[in-house]
Length: 130
Image 1 (cartoon, helix red, strand yellow):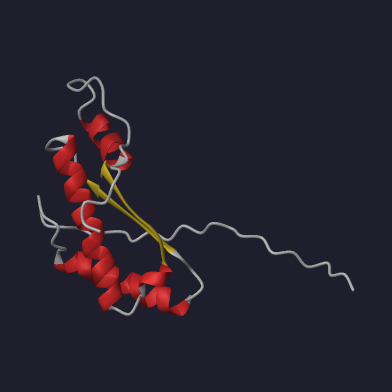
Image 2: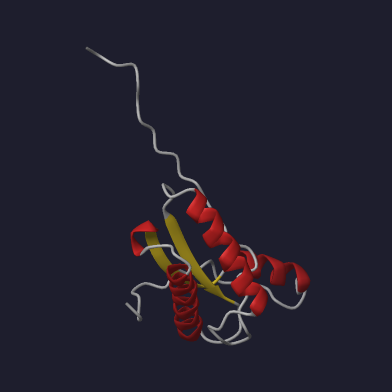
C-alpha cells in the first residue's frame, strides 16, 4: 500500500560560541577548548546531526595569511572534536573563510568614520591542510 509519510531534511545550524584562539594562533584558549568540549557533549546526545565546521580570522593581516589561519583554526577544532569522540563521518564540511562577517560588522560599527569599505566575507578555497 501507499503511505502518507514523507522525509524532509531540515538544515540545523549548531554553533560553537567562544571557540576562541590565542591571538595570531591556531591554539585554542582554555575557554575555547571548554566550548569545544560542551559542543562535543551536545553532539554525542544527537548522533544523527552532521557538523559543518567553518574557520575564521580577524581583519589583521593579508587575505592569504587570514585564509591560512582560518584553515588551521578549523582543523584545530576538527581534531579536538575527534579526540572528544566525534568521528569524521559526522562532518559534512570543513571550510575556511578568512575574515568573518560578524567581525567585519563589529569593526565597521566601531570605526565607522575611519574605515570606508570592508571586503565581503571571503571563502578560502582549497584546504591547504588536507
